[in-house]
Image 1 (cartoon, helix red, strand yellow):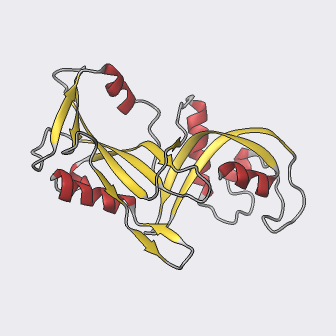
Image 2: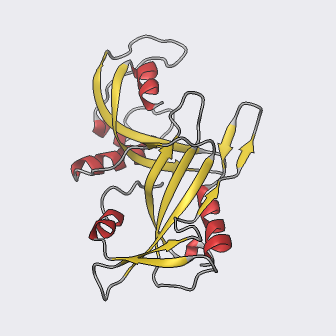
Length: 229
Protein backbone atom coordinates (compact mmCIF):
# COMPACT_ATOMS: atom_id res chain seq x y z
CA UNK A 1 0.00 0.00 0.00
CA UNK A 2 2.74 2.50 0.95
CA UNK A 3 4.74 1.63 -2.17
CA UNK A 4 1.70 2.11 -4.37
CA UNK A 5 0.86 5.49 -2.84
CA UNK A 6 4.40 6.84 -3.33
CA UNK A 7 4.43 5.69 -6.94
CA UNK A 8 0.99 7.11 -7.72
CA UNK A 9 1.46 10.46 -6.00
CA UNK A 10 5.20 11.16 -6.33
CA UNK A 11 6.34 8.96 -9.23
CA UNK A 12 9.02 7.09 -7.27
CA UNK A 13 9.65 3.43 -6.57
CA UNK A 14 9.82 3.20 -2.80
CA UNK A 15 11.27 0.67 -0.34
CA UNK A 16 9.79 1.02 3.15
CA UNK A 17 12.46 0.73 5.87
CA UNK A 18 10.51 1.29 9.07
CA UNK A 19 7.22 2.46 10.56
CA UNK A 20 7.76 6.01 11.80
CA UNK A 21 4.65 6.09 13.96
CA UNK A 22 0.99 5.20 14.10
CA UNK A 23 -1.45 8.07 14.50
CA UNK A 24 -4.90 7.75 15.99
CA UNK A 25 -7.43 10.56 16.04
CA UNK A 26 -11.13 10.31 16.67
CA UNK A 27 -12.63 6.82 16.68
CA UNK A 28 -12.65 5.64 13.11
CA UNK A 29 -9.41 7.32 11.96
CA UNK A 30 -5.89 5.92 11.90
CA UNK A 31 -2.75 6.57 9.85
CA UNK A 32 0.39 4.44 9.62
CA UNK A 33 3.46 6.44 8.56
CA UNK A 34 6.52 4.90 6.93
CA UNK A 35 10.02 6.11 6.10
CA UNK A 36 12.18 4.46 3.47
CA UNK A 37 14.34 4.84 0.40
CA UNK A 38 13.72 5.86 -3.21
CA UNK A 39 14.92 3.01 -5.43
CA UNK A 40 13.82 4.24 -8.86
CA UNK A 41 11.23 6.10 -10.86
CA UNK A 42 11.06 9.79 -11.70
CA UNK A 43 9.70 12.82 -9.87
CA UNK A 44 6.11 13.37 -10.95
CA UNK A 45 5.72 16.76 -12.62
CA UNK A 46 2.25 16.44 -14.11
CA UNK A 47 -1.29 16.50 -12.75
CA UNK A 48 -3.50 13.41 -12.77
CA UNK A 49 -6.32 11.89 -10.73
CA UNK A 50 -3.93 10.95 -7.90
CA UNK A 51 -2.12 14.26 -7.28
CA UNK A 52 -1.31 17.64 -8.80
CA UNK A 53 2.44 16.92 -8.93
CA UNK A 54 5.38 16.26 -6.62
CA UNK A 55 8.36 18.40 -5.64
CA UNK A 56 11.42 18.18 -3.41
CA UNK A 57 11.56 20.74 -0.59
CA UNK A 58 14.31 21.70 1.81
CA UNK A 59 13.62 20.11 5.20
CA UNK A 60 14.03 23.41 7.07
CA UNK A 61 11.44 25.08 4.83
CA UNK A 62 8.89 22.41 5.70
CA UNK A 63 9.57 22.33 9.44
CA UNK A 64 9.55 26.14 9.66
CA UNK A 65 6.26 26.29 7.71
CA UNK A 66 7.81 28.48 5.02
CA UNK A 67 5.76 26.67 2.39
CA UNK A 68 2.01 26.20 2.17
CA UNK A 69 0.99 22.76 3.39
CA UNK A 70 -2.37 21.14 2.82
CA UNK A 71 -2.21 20.03 6.44
CA UNK A 72 0.40 20.84 9.08
CA UNK A 73 -0.20 17.51 10.84
CA UNK A 74 2.64 16.00 8.80
CA UNK A 75 5.23 18.15 10.60
CA UNK A 76 5.35 16.10 13.85
CA UNK A 77 5.62 12.94 11.73
CA UNK A 78 8.58 14.37 9.78
CA UNK A 79 10.22 15.49 13.04
CA UNK A 80 9.86 11.97 14.46
CA UNK A 81 11.33 10.45 11.27
CA UNK A 82 14.31 12.85 11.39
CA UNK A 83 15.03 11.99 15.05
CA UNK A 84 14.87 8.28 14.25
CA UNK A 85 17.31 8.75 11.38
CA UNK A 86 19.70 10.76 13.54
CA UNK A 87 19.90 8.09 16.22
CA UNK A 88 19.99 5.14 13.80
CA UNK A 89 16.58 3.94 14.98
CA UNK A 90 16.24 0.29 13.98
CA UNK A 91 12.48 0.27 13.79
CA UNK A 92 10.35 -2.45 12.29
CA UNK A 93 8.02 -3.16 9.39
CA UNK A 94 4.59 -4.81 9.58
CA UNK A 95 4.58 -8.59 9.72
CA UNK A 96 2.47 -10.42 7.15
CA UNK A 97 -0.07 -12.63 8.93
CA UNK A 98 -3.28 -14.06 7.49
CA UNK A 99 -5.96 -12.29 9.50
CA UNK A 100 -9.59 -11.69 8.65
CA UNK A 101 -10.36 -9.07 11.29
CA UNK A 102 -8.90 -6.37 13.53
CA UNK A 103 -7.37 -7.47 16.84
CA UNK A 104 -5.25 -6.09 19.68
CA UNK A 105 -2.92 -7.89 22.08
CA UNK A 106 -1.49 -6.31 25.24
CA UNK A 107 2.07 -7.00 26.31
CA UNK A 108 1.94 -5.91 29.96
CA UNK A 109 5.47 -6.06 31.32
CA UNK A 110 6.96 -5.76 34.80
CA UNK A 111 10.72 -5.31 35.14
CA UNK A 112 12.02 -6.75 38.40
CA UNK A 113 14.53 -4.22 39.73
CA UNK A 114 15.79 -6.71 42.32
CA UNK A 115 16.64 -9.23 39.60
CA UNK A 116 17.78 -7.28 36.55
CA UNK A 117 17.54 -10.26 34.21
CA UNK A 118 13.91 -11.03 35.08
CA UNK A 119 10.93 -9.80 33.11
CA UNK A 120 7.32 -10.70 33.93
CA UNK A 121 4.56 -10.62 31.30
CA UNK A 122 0.81 -11.10 31.75
CA UNK A 123 -0.45 -14.29 30.06
CA UNK A 124 -4.09 -15.21 29.50
CA UNK A 125 -5.77 -18.55 30.15
CA UNK A 126 -4.28 -19.95 26.93
CA UNK A 127 -0.75 -18.91 27.83
CA UNK A 128 -0.62 -16.12 25.27
CA UNK A 129 -0.97 -12.35 25.43
CA UNK A 130 -4.46 -11.04 26.33
CA UNK A 131 -6.19 -10.36 23.01
CA UNK A 132 -9.49 -8.90 21.87
CA UNK A 133 -11.14 -8.19 18.53
CA UNK A 134 -11.50 -4.51 17.67
CA UNK A 135 -15.13 -3.48 17.08
CA UNK A 136 -15.63 -2.17 13.56
CA UNK A 137 -17.98 0.67 12.79
CA UNK A 138 -19.53 0.27 9.35
CA UNK A 139 -20.01 3.79 7.96
CA UNK A 140 -21.20 2.54 4.59
CA UNK A 141 -21.36 -0.72 2.69
CA UNK A 142 -17.77 -0.25 1.48
CA UNK A 143 -15.97 1.60 4.29
CA UNK A 144 -14.72 0.16 7.56
CA UNK A 145 -13.22 2.26 10.33
CA UNK A 146 -11.39 1.06 13.43
CA UNK A 147 -12.48 2.18 16.86
CA UNK A 148 -9.97 3.85 19.17
CA UNK A 149 -7.29 1.25 20.00
CA UNK A 150 -6.81 2.74 23.47
CA UNK A 151 -10.49 2.17 24.29
CA UNK A 152 -10.07 -1.48 23.33
CA UNK A 153 -6.88 -1.71 25.44
CA UNK A 154 -8.86 -0.37 28.41
CA UNK A 155 -11.52 -3.02 27.85
CA UNK A 156 -8.89 -5.79 27.75
CA UNK A 157 -7.44 -4.51 31.06
CA UNK A 158 -10.83 -4.42 32.73
CA UNK A 159 -12.60 -7.47 31.29
CA UNK A 160 -9.73 -9.92 30.70
CA UNK A 161 -6.74 -8.95 32.85
CA UNK A 162 -8.46 -7.32 35.81
CA UNK A 163 -5.93 -4.51 36.26
CA UNK A 164 -8.58 -1.79 36.14
CA UNK A 165 -7.59 0.37 33.22
CA UNK A 166 -4.57 1.36 31.18
CA UNK A 167 -4.35 4.54 33.29
CA UNK A 168 -2.72 2.30 35.92
CA UNK A 169 0.01 1.38 33.42
CA UNK A 170 2.65 3.21 31.37
CA UNK A 171 2.13 3.01 27.62
CA UNK A 172 5.38 2.61 25.65
CA UNK A 173 4.20 2.11 22.06
CA UNK A 174 3.60 -0.77 19.67
CA UNK A 175 5.78 -3.85 19.84
CA UNK A 176 4.38 -5.18 16.61
CA UNK A 177 1.94 -4.44 13.83
CA UNK A 178 0.80 -7.22 11.53
CA UNK A 179 -1.54 -7.15 8.57
CA UNK A 180 -3.02 -9.54 6.04
CA UNK A 181 -1.15 -8.98 2.79
CA UNK A 182 -3.49 -11.05 0.66
CA UNK A 183 -5.36 -9.29 -2.14
CA UNK A 184 -8.64 -7.89 -0.91
CA UNK A 185 -7.92 -8.64 2.75
CA UNK A 186 -7.34 -5.90 5.33
CA UNK A 187 -7.07 -7.56 8.74
CA UNK A 188 -4.74 -5.78 11.18
CA UNK A 189 -3.23 -6.85 14.51
CA UNK A 190 -1.61 -4.49 17.03
CA UNK A 191 0.58 -5.58 19.94
CA UNK A 192 0.61 -2.71 22.44
CA UNK A 193 3.37 -2.50 25.06
CA UNK A 194 2.56 -1.33 28.59
CA UNK A 195 4.79 -1.25 31.67
CA UNK A 196 3.25 -2.17 35.00
CA UNK A 197 4.67 -0.56 38.18
CA UNK A 198 3.96 -3.70 40.18
CA UNK A 199 2.99 -7.37 40.00
CA UNK A 200 -0.66 -6.62 40.59
CA UNK A 201 -3.44 -9.11 41.25
CA UNK A 202 -5.00 -10.48 38.05
CA UNK A 203 -8.34 -12.00 37.12
CA UNK A 204 -8.74 -15.77 37.32
CA UNK A 205 -7.11 -17.35 34.28
CA UNK A 206 -4.47 -14.65 33.85
CA UNK A 207 -1.02 -15.06 35.37
CA UNK A 208 2.33 -13.30 35.55
CA UNK A 209 4.85 -15.34 33.56
CA UNK A 210 8.42 -14.60 34.66
CA UNK A 211 11.39 -15.18 32.39
CA UNK A 212 15.14 -14.78 32.74
CA UNK A 213 15.50 -14.51 28.96
CA UNK A 214 17.62 -11.39 28.44
CA UNK A 215 16.43 -11.19 24.83
CA UNK A 216 12.91 -10.41 26.06
CA UNK A 217 14.17 -7.64 28.33
CA UNK A 218 16.26 -6.11 25.56
CA UNK A 219 13.39 -6.27 23.09
CA UNK A 220 10.81 -4.50 25.24
CA UNK A 221 13.27 -1.69 26.01
CA UNK A 222 14.85 -1.44 22.57
CA UNK A 223 14.47 1.16 19.83
CA UNK A 224 12.22 -1.17 17.86
CA UNK A 225 9.16 0.15 19.69
CA UNK A 226 6.79 1.95 17.29
CA UNK A 227 5.59 5.36 18.57
CA UNK A 228 1.85 6.10 18.67
CA UNK A 229 0.95 9.76 18.26
